[in-house]
Length: 286
Image (tube, rainbow, N blue to C red):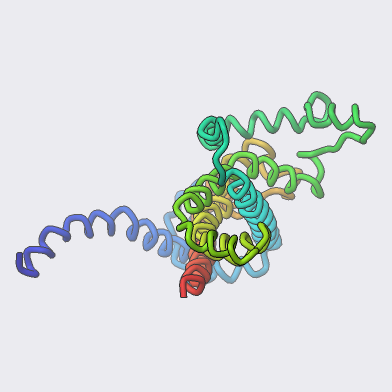
Protein backbone atom coordinates (compact mmCIF):
# COMPACT_ATOMS: atom_id res chain seq x y z
CA UNK A 1 0.00 0.00 0.00
CA UNK A 2 1.54 3.33 -1.04
CA UNK A 3 1.50 6.50 1.02
CA UNK A 4 -1.28 8.19 -0.98
CA UNK A 5 -3.59 5.22 -0.49
CA UNK A 6 -3.04 5.29 3.29
CA UNK A 7 -3.92 8.98 3.39
CA UNK A 8 -7.03 8.33 1.29
CA UNK A 9 -8.30 5.81 3.87
CA UNK A 10 -7.57 8.04 6.89
CA UNK A 11 -8.83 11.30 5.36
CA UNK A 12 -12.58 10.67 6.02
CA UNK A 13 -11.82 9.96 9.71
CA UNK A 14 -9.71 13.12 9.98
CA UNK A 15 -12.45 15.21 8.38
CA UNK A 16 -15.05 13.75 10.75
CA UNK A 17 -12.85 14.45 13.79
CA UNK A 18 -12.29 17.99 12.53
CA UNK A 19 -16.03 18.57 12.20
CA UNK A 20 -16.91 17.06 15.58
CA UNK A 21 -14.01 18.46 17.64
CA UNK A 22 -12.30 21.39 15.94
CA UNK A 23 -15.31 23.19 14.44
CA UNK A 24 -17.13 23.75 17.77
CA UNK A 25 -13.92 25.04 19.35
CA UNK A 26 -13.21 27.44 16.48
CA UNK A 27 -16.82 28.62 16.34
CA UNK A 28 -16.89 29.12 20.11
CA UNK A 29 -13.68 31.13 19.89
CA UNK A 30 -15.24 33.26 17.16
CA UNK A 31 -18.41 33.81 19.22
CA UNK A 32 -16.33 34.84 22.25
CA UNK A 33 -15.22 37.87 20.24
CA UNK A 34 -18.77 38.98 19.62
CA UNK A 35 -21.42 40.68 21.72
CA UNK A 36 -24.68 38.83 21.25
CA UNK A 37 -27.79 39.17 23.37
CA UNK A 38 -30.06 36.45 22.00
CA UNK A 39 -33.31 38.12 23.08
CA UNK A 40 -32.59 41.22 20.98
CA UNK A 41 -33.28 41.59 17.28
CA UNK A 42 -29.62 42.35 16.62
CA UNK A 43 -27.25 39.62 15.53
CA UNK A 44 -23.72 39.07 16.83
CA UNK A 45 -21.60 42.23 16.91
CA UNK A 46 -17.80 41.95 16.61
CA UNK A 47 -16.02 43.44 19.64
CA UNK A 48 -12.66 41.66 19.54
CA UNK A 49 -11.16 40.79 22.91
CA UNK A 50 -13.49 43.02 24.92
CA UNK A 51 -15.31 40.03 26.47
CA UNK A 52 -12.01 38.73 27.82
CA UNK A 53 -11.16 42.15 29.22
CA UNK A 54 -14.54 42.34 30.93
CA UNK A 55 -13.76 39.13 32.84
CA UNK A 56 -10.89 40.84 34.66
CA UNK A 57 -13.34 43.25 36.34
CA UNK A 58 -16.06 40.65 36.92
CA UNK A 59 -16.15 39.50 40.58
CA UNK A 60 -18.64 36.76 39.78
CA UNK A 61 -16.18 35.25 37.28
CA UNK A 62 -13.38 35.24 39.86
CA UNK A 63 -15.74 33.70 42.40
CA UNK A 64 -16.71 30.93 39.96
CA UNK A 65 -13.03 30.32 39.25
CA UNK A 66 -12.33 30.07 42.99
CA UNK A 67 -15.23 27.66 43.52
CA UNK A 68 -14.05 25.55 40.57
CA UNK A 69 -10.53 25.42 42.01
CA UNK A 70 -11.61 24.62 45.59
CA UNK A 71 -14.11 21.96 44.58
CA UNK A 72 -11.87 20.30 41.96
CA UNK A 73 -8.74 20.30 44.10
CA UNK A 74 -10.59 19.09 47.19
CA UNK A 75 -12.50 16.33 45.40
CA UNK A 76 -9.48 15.18 43.36
CA UNK A 77 -7.17 15.06 46.38
CA UNK A 78 -9.59 13.11 48.58
CA UNK A 79 -10.57 10.70 45.79
CA UNK A 80 -7.01 9.94 44.68
CA UNK A 81 -5.71 9.42 48.23
CA UNK A 82 -8.74 7.41 49.39
CA UNK A 83 -8.99 5.41 46.16
CA UNK A 84 -5.29 4.49 46.27
CA UNK A 85 -5.50 3.48 49.94
CA UNK A 86 -8.54 1.28 49.26
CA UNK A 87 -6.79 -0.28 46.24
CA UNK A 88 -3.75 -1.12 48.39
CA UNK A 89 -6.05 -2.65 51.01
CA UNK A 90 -7.94 -4.76 48.45
CA UNK A 91 -4.80 -5.89 46.64
CA UNK A 92 -4.80 -9.30 48.29
CA UNK A 93 -6.70 -12.53 48.00
CA UNK A 94 -9.68 -12.96 50.31
CA UNK A 95 -13.08 -14.60 50.14
CA UNK A 96 -15.69 -12.45 48.39
CA UNK A 97 -13.18 -10.13 46.71
CA UNK A 98 -15.11 -10.16 43.42
CA UNK A 99 -18.33 -9.27 45.26
CA UNK A 100 -16.62 -6.37 47.05
CA UNK A 101 -15.32 -5.04 43.70
CA UNK A 102 -18.83 -5.34 42.26
CA UNK A 103 -20.29 -3.37 45.19
CA UNK A 104 -17.79 -0.57 44.53
CA UNK A 105 -19.17 -0.31 40.99
CA UNK A 106 -22.64 0.69 42.20
CA UNK A 107 -21.89 4.40 42.85
CA UNK A 108 -20.27 4.74 39.41
CA UNK A 109 -23.23 3.07 37.72
CA UNK A 110 -25.72 5.47 39.32
CA UNK A 111 -26.58 8.62 37.39
CA UNK A 112 -25.17 11.86 38.88
CA UNK A 113 -28.66 13.38 39.06
CA UNK A 114 -29.99 10.46 41.11
CA UNK A 115 -26.94 10.55 43.40
CA UNK A 116 -27.37 14.31 43.84
CA UNK A 117 -31.05 13.98 44.75
CA UNK A 118 -30.31 11.27 47.32
CA UNK A 119 -27.43 13.15 48.93
CA UNK A 120 -29.47 16.36 48.82
CA UNK A 121 -32.14 14.65 50.94
CA UNK A 122 -29.48 13.22 53.26
CA UNK A 123 -28.06 16.73 53.79
CA UNK A 124 -31.51 18.21 54.52
CA UNK A 125 -31.39 20.25 57.73
CA UNK A 126 -34.64 18.97 59.28
CA UNK A 127 -35.15 15.49 57.82
CA UNK A 128 -31.71 14.48 56.53
CA UNK A 129 -30.22 11.30 57.98
CA UNK A 130 -26.82 12.97 58.46
CA UNK A 131 -28.17 15.64 60.80
CA UNK A 132 -30.30 13.06 62.60
CA UNK A 133 -27.20 10.97 63.30
CA UNK A 134 -25.33 14.08 64.44
CA UNK A 135 -28.14 14.99 66.85
CA UNK A 136 -28.16 11.46 68.26
CA UNK A 137 -24.43 11.86 68.89
CA UNK A 138 -25.04 15.11 70.74
CA UNK A 139 -23.79 17.34 67.92
CA UNK A 140 -25.44 20.41 66.44
CA UNK A 141 -27.08 19.88 63.02
CA UNK A 142 -25.48 21.74 60.13
CA UNK A 143 -26.87 23.74 57.21
CA UNK A 144 -24.96 21.56 54.77
CA UNK A 145 -26.32 23.08 51.54
CA UNK A 146 -27.38 26.48 52.90
CA UNK A 147 -24.13 27.64 54.49
CA UNK A 148 -21.46 29.28 52.30
CA UNK A 149 -18.75 27.77 54.51
CA UNK A 150 -20.02 24.18 54.37
CA UNK A 151 -21.62 23.83 50.94
CA UNK A 152 -18.39 23.07 49.04
CA UNK A 153 -17.28 20.36 51.54
CA UNK A 154 -20.78 18.86 51.23
CA UNK A 155 -20.44 18.75 47.44
CA UNK A 156 -16.96 17.22 47.76
CA UNK A 157 -18.38 14.49 50.03
CA UNK A 158 -21.04 13.67 47.42
CA UNK A 159 -18.53 13.63 44.56
CA UNK A 160 -16.11 11.51 46.61
CA UNK A 161 -18.79 8.90 47.33
CA UNK A 162 -19.58 8.48 43.64
CA UNK A 163 -16.16 8.70 42.00
CA UNK A 164 -13.62 7.29 44.48
CA UNK A 165 -14.45 3.77 43.20
CA UNK A 166 -13.23 4.81 39.74
CA UNK A 167 -9.80 5.67 41.15
CA UNK A 168 -9.89 2.46 43.17
CA UNK A 169 -10.57 0.25 40.15
CA UNK A 170 -7.91 1.88 37.97
CA UNK A 171 -5.21 1.66 40.64
CA UNK A 172 -6.26 -1.85 41.67
CA UNK A 173 -6.00 -3.07 38.07
CA UNK A 174 -2.48 -1.65 37.93
CA UNK A 175 -1.55 -3.27 41.25
CA UNK A 176 -2.77 -6.68 40.12
CA UNK A 177 -0.58 -6.50 36.99
CA UNK A 178 2.67 -5.68 38.81
CA UNK A 179 5.58 -8.18 38.64
CA UNK A 180 6.26 -10.14 41.82
CA UNK A 181 10.07 -10.11 41.64
CA UNK A 182 10.63 -6.68 43.27
CA UNK A 183 8.35 -7.59 46.18
CA UNK A 184 10.02 -10.95 46.74
CA UNK A 185 13.44 -9.26 46.74
CA UNK A 186 12.23 -6.66 49.25
CA UNK A 187 10.85 -9.42 51.48
CA UNK A 188 14.21 -11.22 51.40
CA UNK A 189 15.97 -7.95 52.30
CA UNK A 190 13.73 -7.57 55.36
CA UNK A 191 11.69 -4.54 54.21
CA UNK A 192 8.48 -3.92 56.15
CA UNK A 193 5.09 -3.32 54.56
CA UNK A 194 5.35 0.48 54.69
CA UNK A 195 8.79 0.48 53.06
CA UNK A 196 7.52 -1.81 50.31
CA UNK A 197 4.52 0.44 49.63
CA UNK A 198 6.53 3.68 49.64
CA UNK A 199 9.63 2.54 47.73
CA UNK A 200 8.22 -0.11 45.38
CA UNK A 201 4.43 -0.19 45.06
CA UNK A 202 3.63 3.51 44.72
CA UNK A 203 6.43 4.27 42.19
CA UNK A 204 5.27 1.33 40.04
CA UNK A 205 1.59 2.38 40.04
CA UNK A 206 2.32 6.11 39.73
CA UNK A 207 1.43 6.19 35.98
CA UNK A 208 -1.96 4.63 36.73
CA UNK A 209 -2.60 7.10 39.54
CA UNK A 210 -1.76 10.03 37.26
CA UNK A 211 -4.06 8.67 34.52
CA UNK A 212 -6.88 8.30 37.06
CA UNK A 213 -6.21 11.87 38.27
CA UNK A 214 -6.35 13.15 34.68
CA UNK A 215 -9.71 11.49 34.08
CA UNK A 216 -11.17 12.79 37.32
CA UNK A 217 -9.71 16.29 36.96
CA UNK A 218 -11.56 16.77 33.66
CA UNK A 219 -14.86 15.71 35.21
CA UNK A 220 -14.33 17.64 38.45
CA UNK A 221 -13.48 20.92 36.71
CA UNK A 222 -16.53 20.77 34.44
CA UNK A 223 -18.97 19.40 37.03
CA UNK A 224 -22.45 20.72 36.37
CA UNK A 225 -25.31 18.32 37.05
CA UNK A 226 -24.47 17.55 40.69
CA UNK A 227 -24.07 21.21 41.69
CA UNK A 228 -27.13 22.30 39.71
CA UNK A 229 -29.37 19.66 41.28
CA UNK A 230 -28.13 20.10 44.86
CA UNK A 231 -27.61 23.88 45.15
CA UNK A 232 -28.09 25.60 41.77
CA UNK A 233 -24.96 27.54 42.69
CA UNK A 234 -26.29 28.71 46.06
CA UNK A 235 -26.45 29.94 48.66
CA UNK A 236 -26.11 33.13 46.62
CA UNK A 237 -23.13 32.14 44.40
CA UNK A 238 -21.14 30.24 47.06
CA UNK A 239 -21.15 27.00 45.03
CA UNK A 240 -21.40 28.42 41.52
CA UNK A 241 -18.48 26.95 39.58
CA UNK A 242 -17.33 28.05 36.13
CA UNK A 243 -19.47 25.56 34.23
CA UNK A 244 -22.61 26.59 36.09
CA UNK A 245 -21.78 30.26 35.52
CA UNK A 246 -21.50 29.52 31.79
CA UNK A 247 -24.97 27.97 31.85
CA UNK A 248 -26.45 30.93 33.75
CA UNK A 249 -24.81 33.46 31.44
CA UNK A 250 -25.89 31.71 28.24
CA UNK A 251 -29.29 30.24 29.06
CA UNK A 252 -30.60 32.47 31.85
CA UNK A 253 -29.22 35.85 30.74
CA UNK A 254 -28.94 34.95 27.00
CA UNK A 255 -25.50 36.59 26.67
CA UNK A 256 -24.01 34.10 24.24
CA UNK A 257 -20.83 36.05 23.52
CA UNK A 258 -19.93 36.26 27.21
CA UNK A 259 -20.89 32.60 27.73
CA UNK A 260 -18.61 31.57 24.85
CA UNK A 261 -15.77 33.52 26.46
CA UNK A 262 -16.27 31.66 29.72
CA UNK A 263 -16.38 28.36 27.82
CA UNK A 264 -13.00 29.13 26.22
CA UNK A 265 -11.58 29.87 29.68
CA UNK A 266 -12.94 26.54 30.96
CA UNK A 267 -11.53 24.67 27.96
CA UNK A 268 -8.12 26.30 28.47
CA UNK A 269 -8.17 25.46 32.18
CA UNK A 270 -8.89 21.77 31.51
CA UNK A 271 -6.24 21.66 28.78
CA UNK A 272 -3.50 23.26 30.92
CA UNK A 273 -4.15 21.04 33.94
CA UNK A 274 -4.08 17.87 31.85
CA UNK A 275 -0.87 18.95 30.12
CA UNK A 276 0.69 19.42 33.56
CA UNK A 277 -0.49 15.97 34.65
CA UNK A 278 0.83 14.44 31.43
CA UNK A 279 4.22 16.06 32.10
CA UNK A 280 4.19 14.65 35.63
CA UNK A 281 3.41 11.20 34.27
CA UNK A 282 6.15 11.43 31.64
CA UNK A 283 8.63 12.58 34.30
CA UNK A 284 7.70 9.64 36.48
CA UNK A 285 8.27 7.20 33.62
CA UNK A 286 11.89 8.28 33.18
